[in-house]
Image (cartoon, rainbow, N blue to C red; front, side, top):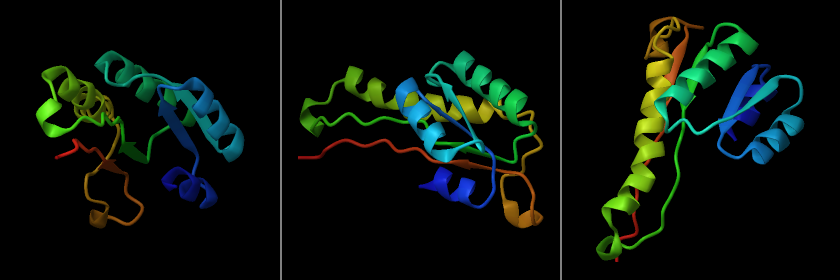
Length: 131
């Protein structure tokens, strides 16, 4: 929903996900204001590469939304360290690696400092089913 609203408002966007087919379908829907990058940013080197590619294809980045994540529906008592790692690697490390990769962009963290300023948003969740 966020990327559709941004494009509808005239923003050029780079969208990234692990699934290339989903990225291709979304870019086809969004049109020429969108570029797609298929990658798993839970590997920090891939997050660096994604930010570099987005920068190369779009120019400066005015907004970075670090929204890497996945779910793993396992109930609390059954949850193992491997289950937790499955969630934390993309949700925590992936989003954090994306933010770190964006560190060279002229971004301020609170856009209220200046209208039209560049800013960064971090969206991540860690969840489990509690029984």
